[in-house]
Amino acid sequence: MVYQVIKSHQPEVNKPWIAAAGEEVRYERKPTKYSGWLWCTNREGQSAWAPERWVIIISSEHVRFIRDYNASELAVDIGQIVEGDIIESGWVFVSSENGKSGWIPLDCVKEHI
Image 1 (cartoon, rainbow, N blue to C red):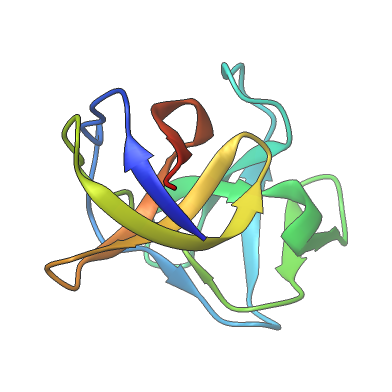
Image 2 (tube, rainbow, N blue to C red):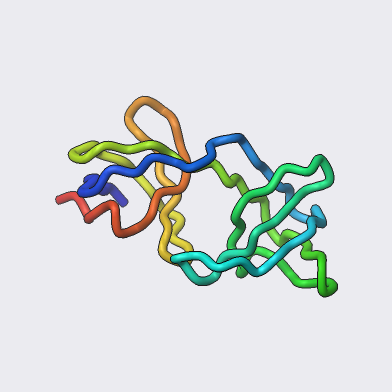
Protein backbone atom coordinates (compact mmCIF):
# COMPACT_ATOMS: atom_id res chain seq x y z
CA MET A 1 0.00 0.00 0.00
CA VAL A 2 1.20 3.51 -0.76
CA TYR A 3 0.97 6.17 1.96
CA GLN A 4 1.53 9.89 2.23
CA VAL A 5 3.13 11.15 5.43
CA ILE A 6 0.81 13.59 7.23
CA LYS A 7 2.85 13.93 10.43
CA SER A 8 6.64 13.77 10.64
CA HIS A 9 8.33 11.09 12.72
CA GLN A 10 11.83 11.07 14.17
CA PRO A 11 13.04 7.88 15.89
CA GLU A 12 14.05 8.27 19.54
CA VAL A 13 16.79 5.66 19.07
CA ASN A 14 17.71 4.32 15.68
CA LYS A 15 20.24 1.58 16.31
CA PRO A 16 19.70 -1.50 14.15
CA TRP A 17 18.09 -4.32 16.16
CA ILE A 18 17.22 -7.51 14.32
CA ALA A 19 15.94 -10.80 15.73
CA ALA A 20 15.70 -14.04 13.78
CA ALA A 21 12.82 -16.47 14.09
CA GLY A 22 13.66 -18.81 16.98
CA GLU A 23 15.84 -16.27 18.82
CA GLU A 24 15.19 -15.97 22.56
CA VAL A 25 15.41 -12.60 24.31
CA ARG A 26 14.52 -11.11 27.69
CA TYR A 27 11.37 -9.00 27.84
CA GLU A 28 9.56 -6.49 30.03
CA ARG A 29 6.13 -4.93 29.92
CA LYS A 30 6.79 -1.19 29.99
CA PRO A 31 4.27 1.62 29.65
CA THR A 32 3.95 2.83 26.07
CA LYS A 33 1.50 4.86 24.01
CA TYR A 34 0.94 1.85 21.74
CA SER A 35 -0.37 -1.39 23.20
CA GLY A 36 0.84 -4.74 21.90
CA TRP A 37 4.58 -4.08 22.23
CA LEU A 38 7.18 -5.60 24.58
CA TRP A 39 10.53 -4.10 25.56
CA CYS A 40 13.06 -6.78 24.56
CA THR A 41 16.77 -7.14 25.25
CA ASN A 42 19.02 -9.50 23.30
CA ARG A 43 22.12 -11.36 24.50
CA GLU A 44 24.37 -8.46 23.45
CA GLY A 45 22.43 -6.12 25.78
CA GLN A 46 20.70 -4.18 22.99
CA SER A 47 17.06 -3.30 23.62
CA ALA A 48 14.12 -2.39 21.39
CA TRP A 49 10.34 -2.62 21.19
CA ALA A 50 8.97 -5.77 19.55
CA PRO A 51 5.39 -6.76 18.68
CA GLU A 52 3.94 -9.12 21.26
CA ARG A 53 2.14 -11.04 18.51
CA TRP A 54 5.51 -11.89 16.91
CA VAL A 55 6.78 -13.81 19.96
CA ILE A 56 5.85 -16.70 22.20
CA ILE A 57 6.27 -16.12 25.92
CA ILE A 58 8.38 -19.02 27.19
CA SER A 59 8.95 -17.84 30.80
CA SER A 60 8.30 -14.86 33.04
CA GLU A 61 11.46 -13.25 31.62
CA HIS A 62 11.96 -14.65 28.11
CA VAL A 63 10.21 -14.77 24.74
CA ARG A 64 11.04 -16.54 21.47
CA PHE A 65 10.48 -14.87 18.10
CA ILE A 66 8.17 -16.78 15.75
CA ARG A 67 9.27 -14.75 12.73
CA ASP A 68 12.17 -12.53 11.72
CA TYR A 69 11.93 -9.00 13.11
CA ASN A 70 13.65 -5.71 12.31
CA ALA A 71 13.11 -3.01 14.97
CA SER A 72 14.43 -0.10 12.88
CA GLU A 73 12.33 3.05 12.82
CA LEU A 74 12.31 5.41 9.86
CA ALA A 75 12.54 9.20 9.96
CA VAL A 76 9.85 10.71 7.69
CA ASP A 77 8.70 14.23 6.84
CA ILE A 78 5.26 15.59 5.95
CA GLY A 79 4.42 15.05 2.28
CA GLN A 80 6.82 12.16 1.80
CA ILE A 81 5.48 9.08 -0.06
CA VAL A 82 6.23 5.66 1.43
CA GLU A 83 5.15 2.08 0.76
CA GLY A 84 4.21 -0.38 3.47
CA ASP A 85 2.53 -3.72 3.84
CA ILE A 86 3.09 -4.77 7.46
CA ILE A 87 0.78 -3.11 9.98
CA GLU A 88 1.20 -4.03 13.64
CA SER A 89 -0.27 -2.56 16.82
CA GLY A 90 -0.51 1.05 15.63
CA TRP A 91 2.66 1.01 13.49
CA VAL A 92 3.42 0.28 9.84
CA PHE A 93 6.72 -0.97 8.36
CA VAL A 94 7.46 1.20 5.32
CA SER A 95 10.07 1.80 2.64
CA SER A 96 10.86 5.26 1.36
CA GLU A 97 11.69 6.32 -2.19
CA ASN A 98 15.40 6.45 -1.24
CA GLY A 99 15.35 2.73 -0.32
CA LYS A 100 15.45 3.10 3.46
CA SER A 101 12.92 1.18 5.54
CA GLY A 102 11.60 1.04 9.09
CA TRP A 103 8.62 1.37 11.38
CA ILE A 104 6.57 4.57 11.73
CA PRO A 105 3.38 5.21 13.70
CA LEU A 106 0.30 4.50 11.61
CA ASP A 107 -1.19 7.84 12.63
CA CYS A 108 1.65 9.57 10.71
CA VAL A 109 0.30 8.43 7.34
CA LYS A 110 -2.82 8.29 5.22
CA GLU A 111 -3.51 6.11 2.20
CA HIS A 112 -2.18 7.80 -0.93
CA ILE A 113 -4.55 7.92 -3.88
